[in-house]
Amino acid sequence: MANSWTKSFSAGLGQINLSSVSSGASRIAKGFNNSVQATRERLGQISPDDITELPAEYKELESRVDALRTTHLALLKITQAYGTETYDYPTQISESVSELSQSVAHNLTAFAATNLKGTNIPAPHVTPAVKVPPKTLNHALSRAAGVGAAVEGPDERLGKALKIYAEVNEKIGDARLQQDHTIRELFLTPWQATLSTSLTVAMKARAAVKQSRLELDAAKQGYYRMKNASPQRQEQARLEVENAEDDLVQKTEVAITLMKTLLDNPEPLKNLNELVKAQLVFHSTAAEALQGIQGDIEELTVAAEGDYRKSRDH
Image (tube, rainbow, N blue to C red; front, top):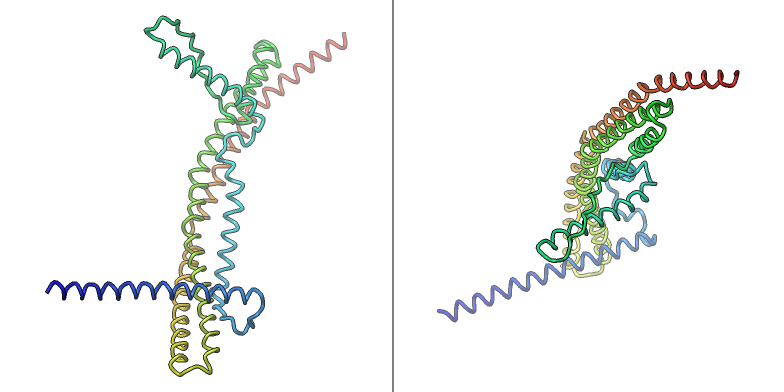
């Protein structure tokens, strides 16, 4: 009984292995034939009439998906700047180097002070921690104007003007940081998601159509070469063509559905709207803030010019 079961199991295992090998060999053969077909088409060795024409609807959707992908990549390449705080203030690098050295000094002295407790070695004085200011152009202007206001003094007209200018630029800088955060959350993240999900799925479906089309045309070429072969081999070649045709139809329908779904999706428009809204809020805030102080600075300017003319007249 045991020997009978063992023989049956071994026979079944042999069939499975043979089936797997056969399936793998078939896939390799198809892959090779597709590669040969693609190369011959690229070299112009196959007549355009022998290349299966895909449906007009499919080709139109392909063009529209390509345009959508190009648009996503182009905008993403530029708007990724909103993920970097320093995009409008490139000269911050010297400040960053200085802050890094101060941060290293703080960490080293703090580490030493902690680990030398309870020993005879005197603990070093811990240097203060570095508070890293925002690295935007407006925050940099605010810091520079603030230093200028302190140097000039609060009673001097230039000092007064620099003080209110510093305050407004800090407000504008904070608004810019909020704009960037909103754009990252409501534009960049979903915009990238469309590229990595819906567009990727559609592109894979198109790749499957291309491979299926190459397989069909390779099968047709094989069938043409079977004209002088045995009836059995001719029938086998004909069935391969039919199966390849069915596969192409099915994969084309799937790709059309996926591309339509992608193109009908309102998300890209919603994302773009969020980008515009975030920019509008920032620029409105900046314009309102600057407008609020421009009159005050103009009054100080007029007063300074009047005093200057009087001093020249005397």
